[in-house]
Image (tube, rainbow, N blue to C red; front, side):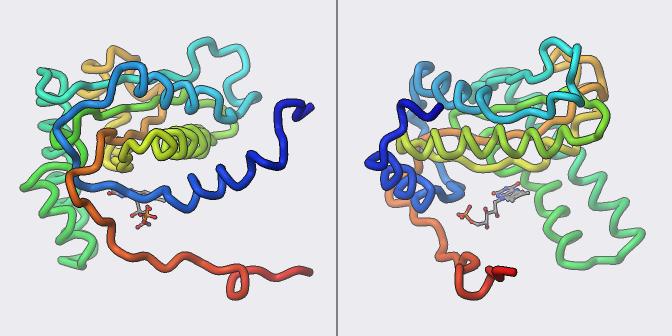
Length: 212
Ligand SMILES: Cc1cc2nc3c(=O)[nH]c(=O)nc-3n(C[C@H](O)[C@H](O)[C@H](O)COP(=O)(O)O)c2cc1C
């Protein structure tokens, strides 16, 4: 195996991995359908939990919601209301902690990445036993993120999507049976002019690794 892999390819992957960032402000110019399909194709090649989805056709589904579409407006409204409700419920349990304040802001302003980027892409993974659909979705989205980066297309995770997987209106919008798929999502589009992500400190080899 690995017949097509040569050592010269590895530095290119390093560049892509190091360039991957969360983009949170987008140009209104939409990437082409071809580019979006290439990104989705990378996600479809990500690992899946073979035993959990054995005998389940269509275990991974992808929904591309275009900006300014009726579907985008519906998705944005559902997620915004969900976050507002979630914030209220959580506040009753834990009080006005910073996480709750942030949820409240999202409940008022809407979910970032839904309605302010050319595409909101939702990925569904059929739930099964063991219950690892969320992990499979992470692999799928990471592949998409790296492929988007390789095409200079910005990517933002939209974790609020996970909260909507058992929402009847959201599942109706996607035309999937309610509760059968774990969901996650991302926004895709070119970064806004002069967009600079904040500086981030990543874990380091020296501090994070122990050889036993
Ligand atoms: C499980 C998970 C959920 C995340 N959810 C969101 C999200 O909903 N919106 C967002 O803008 N970023 C989200 N992020 C992105 C992180 O905030 C980001 O990766 C981190 O701050 C490092 O920045 P970088 O992506 O630019 O390297 C999420 C990351 C992870 C791992």
